[in-house]
Length: 79
Image (cartoon, rainbow, N blue to C red; front, side):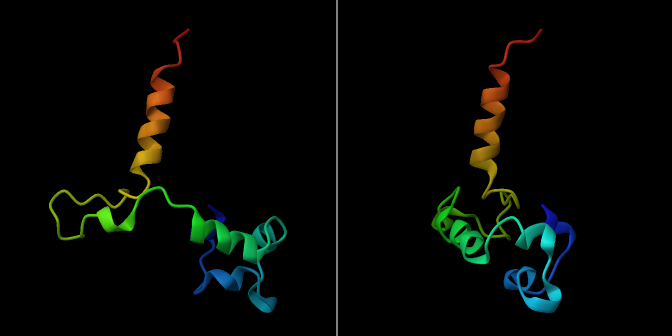
């Protein structure tokens, strides 16, 4: 989330000398962060719709996780 607020030209900049951001760099090593991005996928990129498709959704990569979360929340009994 912090990377969305404090944007830098490259993800590696959050760990580099003068542009180092302690709110990020002090909590996760650069290589660990990069590994998460490389290996954690919510959806196969081969199944993404192109931006010019009428059914395109900019959140399509995270929609499976959002849908699963919503389904769990729906099952919580109301008090």
